[in-house]
Length: 343
Ligand code: AMP
Ligand code: TRP
Image (cartoon, rainbow, N blue to C red; front, side):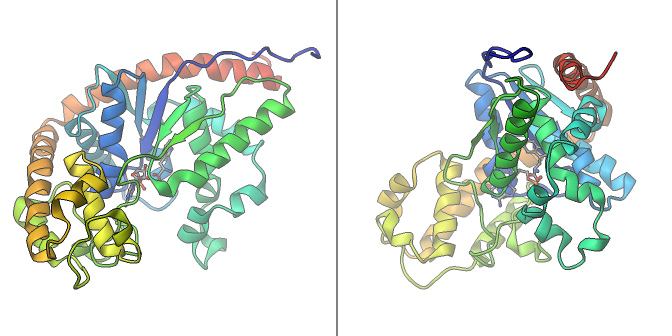
């Protein structure tokens, strides 16, 4: 082993994930992310969850709206079962080590890697010349979010898979260039029936807060009536439900509704189909609506209550940031040493 090579450190399991406070949490965020974040906490992992406000400003955010959305997202996390005593919950900009490590990673990542990111291509669209530099560098900041804690596991929805591969590429290149094994190879955790919740209007599109049609999504703040109405109007095909998962192939809308049901009921798709196979949508939709209201109404009530107490939220976030910094600062310091920065 040549000089400067570190022996492989053992990385203890540590979970990190983040959501952008860019407005409007959907059922996709809940099932694909927050519900699973809470489950990992409940399984006893060390869990760190972040509101990535610095990622949010890679596209324009009105300052007052950003403040409100950050607190609303914090309320959403807590209402979904994240306990600020058992998990570390904070906003990214309060922990400057994220931006500091991101700069180092900007110098590790290659332009070609960034250009291949589908989220960059989608968000910058045809007008790449006019997109912010931050939007282009977004995945390097995301890698820093994760690696500044030496996080080993990152629960996310399907759409973030490519960014996590890039995180591993950055860690591997850093380790290789500096002849170290300092950064772990983080594992994405993309599991469950609802890692890709689709639009209620079009089974080929992801359910998204940015879809112009409000009927395409269920918002975590929707009341019982609008949840039921959106499910009643959800697009489907004329066939009855199949009894086995194979029968959902080429039926994206049917598959989406069954996946949502399974994730909310905490059952497998097979178990759900065993019960509902053969039923027409006119029977299945009211069952789904009842289940969605039963599971989501307490979340929106609790979010509403927390939003009445912004000072309580702010106190939780600043204590979370302090705890996060106590982990991130020594890892950043060690990174600077490895890179050769004096200080
Ligand atoms: P974003 O709102 O884009 O910051 O996403 C926050 C988290 O929610 C990420 O882990 C996403 O993968 C997840 N997510 C967003 N939309 C969906 C969806 N339609 N289905 C499943 N997961 C989603
Ligand atoms: N890019 C993620 C999204 O849009 C948000 C995010 C930022 C994130 N940093 C992260 C997710 C670190 C997981 C880990 O959903």
